[in-house]
Length: 407
Image (cartoon, rainbow, N blue to C red; front, side, top):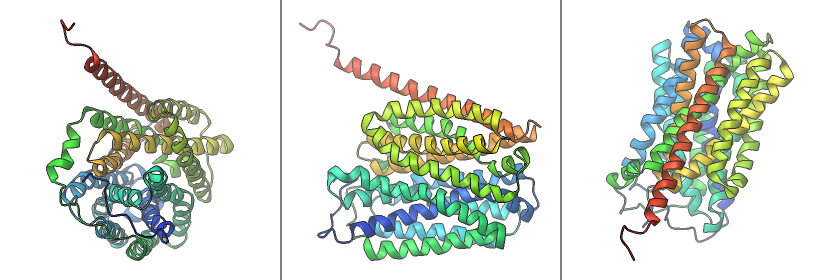
């Protein structure tokens, strides 16, 4: 039995609702991941730290994703996937509740780490559940619907939570995520069919994917290159208020622009993947670098800055989804781990981007300079991914060469 084989439902009556339930879990995750950026100044005031120091709680969440994804997926490989998904999304809700009641810099940072633990594992499990609901030829659309929940969160969940946090206090936004997580768990319980445990799965089998060179190249490219986006976007709130000199009410407009770009990018990513997954990632990194350079020069101008934030959101989704497809293909039988590793890589990028952005800010170069940090990281991701493709091509060419002395 392969990693994606589960018992398919006898009836397709609840397929749409099942996919919606899994996407709602992605919506909860996307909301909690990105809303911290929109509420950075409010949280900083609440825990009595600078914006740059508060940016480290973004790094803590990302580190939780990195640690949790491979460990939870590998240890839970033999568990029934529906029950595992429910447990993971409820754990996310608990992590947000802990954040809402935490007091002080270190407790809030620890709470964000806990909230990040189920993130990548949930997407790995949910992707396999989604694939099991449909015929093989529709598997890609089903998996992308789960990811679309994350993109829609950037359009609806993040702006709404930003407004909620600014109005009722930043803690209210984390309570709201708890409610969404409970709703998602309830819908998964009702509409996602049970799938038996995969008794053939093993910890060693799942972790064997980490021995594959192309898995390592794709993970490395994602963790470095995607940091280009987060180096700038992690500090979008102070960029809006201090660089563009706008009121805090404009922050929701910028997060909305990013979210709309993410939704468009998610739609485009599937079509681009059908064309060429590898070129989509390469060109995505190149375009991200160009857009970030442009943002450095127009960050103080409202309309161009909004347009470029929209573009960054679109390119981020294109790169992320095509990297996920690349990883799932490269992981062989361990496709659940491959899908989860993509989110580990992207959240390492999240943490690296926020960290290097804070270093530049504290060095006195200002919030605008974070976009140039992003250019460097995106360019490095491009180089790593290109090296991986070169190695793959040479390995394939060598494998097809006739043995020396063959007639």
